Amino acid sequence: MNKFLAIGLIAGAGALMASCSKDASNSDFGQNAIEFGTYLGRDAQTKGTITDIDFLKGEDKGFGVTAFYTGQDAWTKEGRTAIAPNFMYNQQVTSTDGTNWSYSPVKYWPTMTGDMISFFAYAPYNATGITLAAKDAASNNTSLTFTVADNVADMVDFVAANAIDQEQKKPEKGGQTAVTFNFKHEL
Image 1 (tube, rainbow, N blue to C red):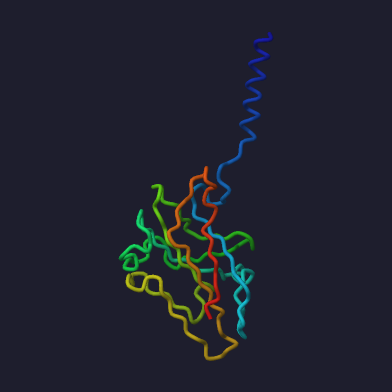
Image 2: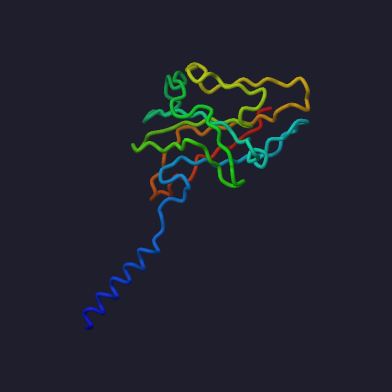
């Protein structure tokens, strides 16, 4: 009888421990998904609408991301500016809950250790006066054109950021929580 009681206690403890384990991923996207974080410094001096984080998290706003997968090569290596966007092109990133950033389709980190992706972002997404280089424009792949509005009140407070040579960090080294863009007012 004691033998069955001991086996029952061990099995019950195992079931209890299994029910309390946590999922390794903190993301709504799933493990290894690329997530974004943002920081935007002091307000710009403008007579138009000021771009800040609250503005970007508004309905149908957000920011655009273009990204380049460069394998084991750093972005700064000779010729990196001669490739067309091969990972993301003008991907809109929005906040549906006012807290987290999301986009679709979700992209995942490369599985090979040391593979890198370089990200370039701008905001507000597809605003009047902002035009990206064409997706196949390898020689101008990270550029965009900004047109100043005739009416000062219609001016867009254009911000931009980049995150060069990003790679997924190993979980034992803190993991990669998000690609963080430190947006700067460009005007």
